Image (cartoon, rainbow, N blue to C red; front, side, top):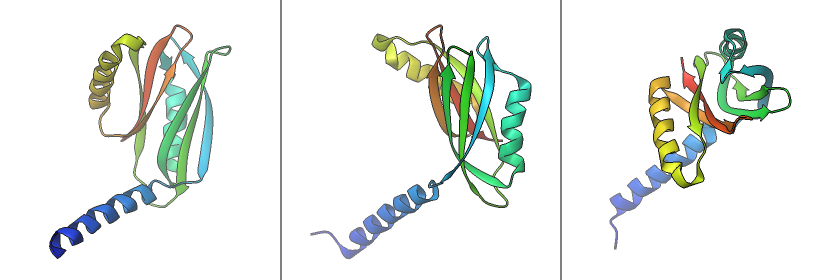
Length: 142
């Protein structure tokens, strides 16, 4: 039989997890259609994203991205909620390399290295370009 203290601390741990998940809930989204050339976003496009994220009084909670092969562009979305004094964020896009289903661990290791280089990653998204290269975009603390 477990002690009352153990049961109490288990409850606190479970409640803390539930509260953390609840803070990620959001229902507003901002879309950006961005040029993606030679594995990079332009500085102007990156600035447009970060200007919105940091200047609109919003708290960004998620990022999404889809590569549009026919246009060599990406559709990037930010999920957010309106909040004053929101945390400043930035984005970093990194090439992981050719996707090889037999060497996923190699891609995982590379992604971990890129995330460490990017800084304090909040969340990420993956996409594959028309050359079958795997990329990660990181939403990070600025």
